[in-house]
Image (tube, rainbow, N blue to C red):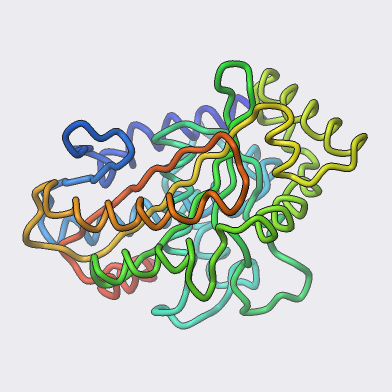
Amino acid sequence: MEEKIEALKEYYKKVCTPLIFINETKLENDKIAKVYLYDFSTEEELENFKKVFQEYLPFYVLNFDLISLYDLQKDISQQLKNDAKYIYESDITPNRKTENNGIFGELFNDYYIKNIINKEIFLTYLSRRTYNSGNWENQGIDIVACEKINNKLNIILSEAKFVGSLSRAKEDLKGDISGEHEHLNKEYINGYMDFVINRQFGLDKVRSEEVQRLINDFNAKRWTEKLEFIDCINKLSCSCKFVYFAIFKQSRDRDIKDFKESINEIVNEFNNKIRETEIENYSIEVVFIPTFNTSMDLKNKMEEWD
């Protein structure tokens, strides 16, 4: 299983990553924000998003035992696209109106976490779904991942938006921090991470032994002392990283400085709110992908099946 997953990730790195996640640019003297400023034509961009979405959808959605069934000696691109069409048209994913379907932003967010910064999964798409969930979106923080830093566990919690403009992306991400649907509060994080931790079955098979050991130690501490998630994070000197990820149209004013004000607003909102969670060790990252096409043009293209 592990070999198949690594081979697929190598395929994505070689074939899919250069279609979107290139020309990573950062603000001067600022390591907490990234903007991907590629320069494709509008038609190239449409085709790129379609290819990455359709070929990554099975990896994002399926359990790893099903991913291990792929035959890497055959046309892997066609296998992935065939399965993606079946997945997208079935009840595995919500059959919602294109403009309201959250899977677009979540999928590219997941791609970034697993394939660009190479973190390990803490929660799968299917484990967020419940029986007979129908057309309801998956609830909660969009992506949960993990890594080892200085022999301590770092939990990554990421929110994603795929919207029409920079201002909309900024306001929606700020809303996840402290708005009507805020996720950055102690009660919510404790409750959601309790849900996440109870859905770890089988994921130990696809994680490194070192990361899995840290997760086991964390769970043992939390259970034996009956600790809430944040209390356990603090007692073990672990940490949390919060990633705010957005794809939006901005075909002009694409210099890195044109994003500075919005990035700073998100970071300031985060800094003002994070104290209330009582998490002692934390960090933030903001990731922007400005596009030349509208979000609806891109989403409609991704729903075209050859």
